Length: 172
Image (cartoon, rainbow, N blue to C red):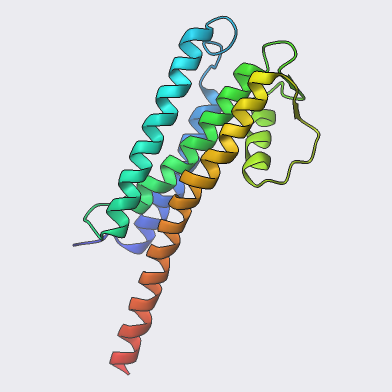
């Protein structure tokens, strides 16, 4: 299996998530929210299930050592998950009484990352029942899917490091 040169791999690995976040910041999100609740919830649900299924497949591919670039795909899916929840929070914040403190994309992204890290500063509060359910869903989603993805990436990095150490031992 041929691999991309290291500088190219790093540029791609870092550049694609940066590009994904940059695109998210410029794409209008007015389509989601209380104006189109059915379309918003269906989009969120389908995207969440799609990411979960794809993430599980990529984790399986990594654990089985199958060909491809599962680590890059896992990183992109983790980033997409963050943006998916951020979009949901931004949309819910447009409904009075659901959130206190989210008025911009930065607020929504901040709340998503703080929730994912289980820090919870308390400056943004899910006050509505729907918002609280989605926050609980994000916490469970993070525990199951994102932790599994991070574990697969960690496994790949550890394996690569062990292979390098073994090669150096055999050379010298």
